[in-house]
Length: 144
Image (cartoon, rainbow, N blue to C red; front, side, top):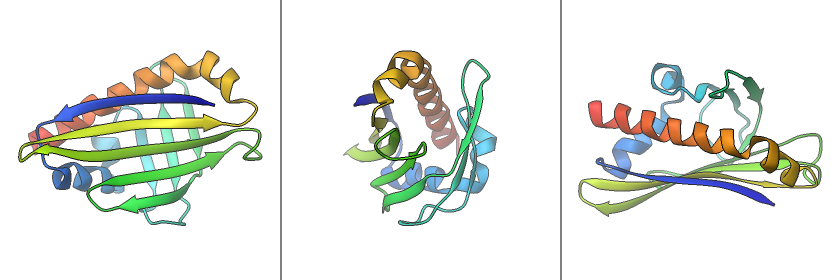
């Protein structure tokens, strides 16, 4: 198992952050990491996600939404061939700190035989990409 975990405090309500995260049609306008999402966040539904990493590598995959709790949490999971070989579970968890501030816990848990290899090879750039997205989200939400 390997996990990439980031967090950021954003001067906005969970509802404001949720509205931005749930607006899948507009990711390309503000997000330098997740540059596109085809589909809506709905439990059990497959979506298509386009990623652009800081090293200019690109990746498209088709995970399934496994948890959608309005104003609280979004999770999706994808695999490479088989879950036992490689599986990633991505999450956004919103926690209200006070009336004006929300903590965003943003990460992914990688499991399967290839997870440690992935962590050694791509863990650093994945962490960097998550932090870039966090900052992009902060700018987007606080400028609306």
